[in-house]
Amino acid sequence: MTSFGLPDPRKQVAPVMGQLTGMRRWLEKRFADLVAECQVPGAAVAVTAEGGLVEAAAGVLSRRTGVEVTPDSVFQIGSVAKVWTATLVMQLVDEGLVDLDVPVRTYVPNFRVADDDASETITIRHLLCHTAGFEGDYYPGTHGGAAETLQRYVESVLPNLPQYFAPGEMWSYSTAGFDVLSRVVEVLRNMPYADALRHHLVSPLGSGQFASCADEAILFRAAVGHVPTGPDGPAEPVTTWAQPCWPNGGLAMSAQTMLGIAQLQLRNGLAADGSRLLSADAAAEMTQPQVEQPRLGTSVSWHGLGWMVHEWEGREVLGHTGGTVGQHSFLWIVPDCDVAVALLTNGGDAGKLHNDLWTLVLADLTGLRPPPALVPPTKLEPVRNPERYIGCYQLFQRSVETVLADGAGKLWLVNAADDERAELAHVEGDLFAALNPSGQVTRAVMFLGADENHQAAYLHSGEAAPRVATAPG
Image 1 (cartoon, rainbow, N blue to C red):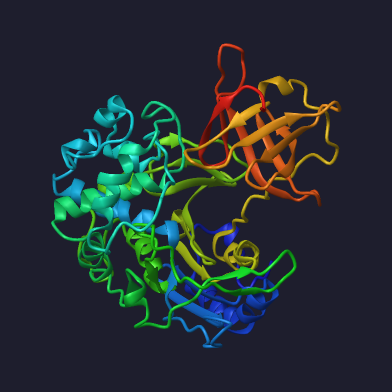
Image 2: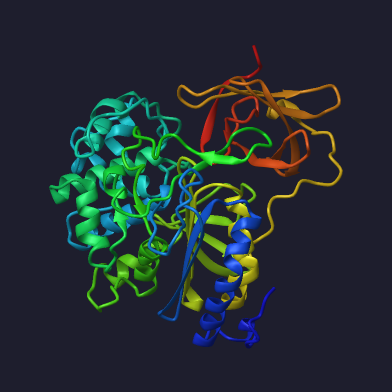
């Protein structure tokens, strides 16, 4: 771990400004090399500590054009937009326009999913906490212009989405739920979501680098996502800047602009000029644990209202990540150190870049290191009760995933779309690591619930996929 030649932050609660100065110098010397080492085409980072700010940028916006990344370049933020949406909703709570625990239909009367009982009982809190229980990631195509996308999605797509579990029963990540929240904002603000975001948060926070769609992003230095051309091929620019079928999939910001929502949280709802954008009570409630998340090999312990609540070495860390077409974003807050960081990338090994930044830089400001990634046992033992796990699991109109057991007591996860097989290595309890042929972990898988035969009811890997058959075939 680099130290910048400054006092050990583990011996103090918050960093000193000298450390931030040291970080600026380190980023100037090292950030570009780190981006290149991780084969990330381009990246931008912004860090705040005790009110100070440092920024850095490296690489190119697109390998097709070779235009360099600068600190004011905009990248797509993906699901980090959920924190912004949650804050807009909490502003409505402050104004007495929204009650978190009343049905969504109170505000959007035509809200409906396939299950009538759930349609009547799903609340705003359920949506904010990802516990509404309906299909959360189904987007069949473009639904119209930006001003009408959310309305059409809520009225035409949601009624077809199945209910997997009763509202409030468990956590299952739901982008669709946040699209409903965005529609609530539109209805109560009487303006398109992007206009509400700009008027009530982006502009008051003093942020200038913000685009809600490709038409606006082209006015800035906009990053283009990159994806691999093959198993060993280089990352090349995508042919579509954003997925048009996502109601809010094209939000783009600079790293400093994305950092603004974290700074608002650190200031307990105050903008930099001292104006109050969110009550201190609402800001605090957003970080309170609302629902426990499955232990999927990450440090996420709970979900708040928009924020994911982590526990690192016994200390609270708030965060959210996002991914779009070849772009990945990371936003973290360490409240007791008054530190926050925003990282934006457009391809390559963004996860390694993120982890390296934490290990090499932010540990100096916070005294924290990110928890180790999920590591399977060095010796894979036969699964003792494979009958609990074998079967087929499926989310709405997505490929079936089948869990098989072989004669040696091994479990295999097979995706019907491409017949890809991954061995499931037992970690603990009902938690497994899916391994590729090289033995590398591709994702964590947890089995939840039980039927009358003690077979798992769900395969959970971020979303809870229900069992659709007890055996393949």
